[in-house]
Length: 211
Ligand SMILES: C[S@@+](CC[C@H](N)C(=O)[O-])C[C@H]1O[C@@H](n2cnc3c(N)ncnc32)[C@H](O)[C@@H]1O
Image 1 (cartoon, protein in one colour):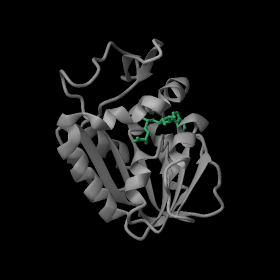
Image 2 (cartoon, protein in one colour):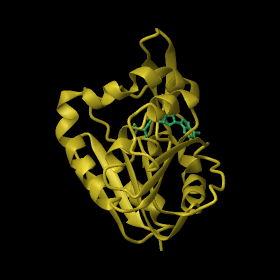
Image 3 (spheres, protein in one colour):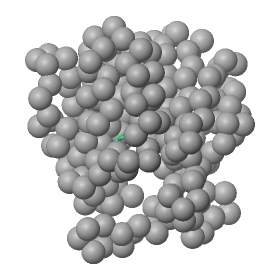
């Protein structure tokens, strides 16, 4: 999965150009600008910085991380307002101590790649980098027949996998889960009793505050 995204870095943002997804994306961008306004935001698995650009319009400060230097290189090259956005290499499943805690956290299209059996451990590690009361948001894909890449197998833990091809001709198998509202709520139940899950046609977004 890590190598797949390193090789996909240059073509990654094409996924945001699909015409049928524009109305959903516009809604998500608006909501994100609102919830992160004035915040000190930790964005993990930031990829090429597509969502970072959106948050930079309203957040006070952003640290955006990813495990792949290839995606971060594309993100860093974007025209950022001086002093607002920093980037760092970090494994989202073993986040380091960043030397400060953040009052907001975000991960886009990352939850779906975390093995089901590691979600609780991942969330505990992510939340530990945030302040009490921090606002957290996750955004990801819904499975849409005819639009999503078909799932070709499910493992014994319930994780689903897609076969994917890149422009360089390479073939990959990627773990990609499509949780519904109830599954998202159930995973987050040990961290919050109040989570808003928005389901659009192509995407879902979960927003909550840490207690
Ligand atoms: C689907 S992309 C999402 C990128 C970006 N958040 C977005 O929404 O456009 C998943 C990202 O996770 C990164 N990634 C894969 N494994 C990771 C890990 N263990 N820790 C941190 N990032 C990882 C990949 O490099 C890739 O940039």
